[in-house]
Length: 443
Image 1 (cartoon, rainbow, N blue to C red):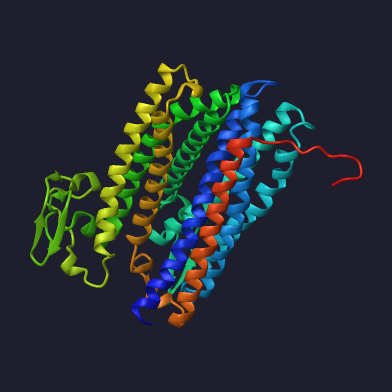
Image 2 (image 1 turned 120 degrees about the vertical axis):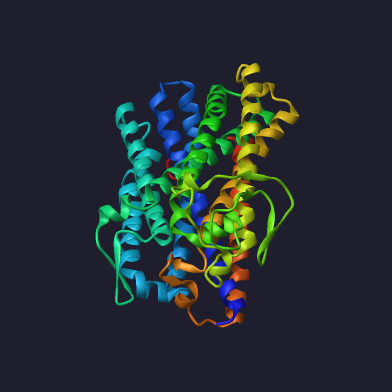
């Protein structure tokens, strides 16, 4: 198998996985925000107006998430058959639980949530919305457990080259799954809030705001800084867990060529044999104790991990870019909160520049999620299951022409779907939610 075929296979899978994670995150964040809005809702209140608009966006993201999950399930078997041969006893049950919660637990309550608001009591409908949010959380939970297990295989034993599941509890709680889920939940809420703010800014530019717009505007401005802090804390804790068990990622992030005592963390460097060429200041000197490494403890260097280290540039710079994007996001969020407070949380009073800030918040959030997940996935290379199975061993022998064709088609299809989703959001922001009257004799 050539290097080009390996890169194409990896690009196809990461593209499908990223598309699925985006809509799963948007669905999860909107589900809990809708639950909060439904709790606050009273007849004719602002939360009711906000709920009725955003539940349509939630339904659209849920359908897109369902569709995006199918290529991921197919590619696991077609592109990486060796992965299922070696780790199918772990991946199979987790994928089955994901499908079970997505298609049964969540979907059982989805119809009542979307169409039963006027036919159910307030308490019953709140309970239904809460069950849909819980179902979305369980779906995301099993996905995070699987991704965390690939990063840190706990709760399973390696028997004659094949992974066997040893315990559901240890699989779910002893590794990185709880922290990864908290990181995903914070990112989901952050993504949903920035989308709501950006779309509210666009809606109120075209027509006067209503009580629902003002309710969403205040919720988004106050929720953003909290979610950014939660995501930063979760990311730091995930780093403490994974960097210790993944010496190649640690050496790449720190850019330490030779093994021994931990080198200072450099903001910018380029590894060369025996030294690093430094272009800017050191940011951390004594970082070893933060990871639980003794002050005189040693770590492995890149020269000891030849062939087992992830791509240096992508792993090194994605970690720094995530820090920069998080800082920029917090600054813009605080500026937007300050301006919103001065306006009395009235989106009609936003200037052109202030509306642009809210759109920038959305793009920064999208960039942060892309960079963060890219670092997590690329930093695990060349392994499919950390420390035990490489992706090259799991790869199917597929010809390069076919891989190129599928990759180009995949980019075109996902691009069309993403553009269509964006256009639907723009249409909804311009015209709102128009109820369709049903007449006798018509559909």
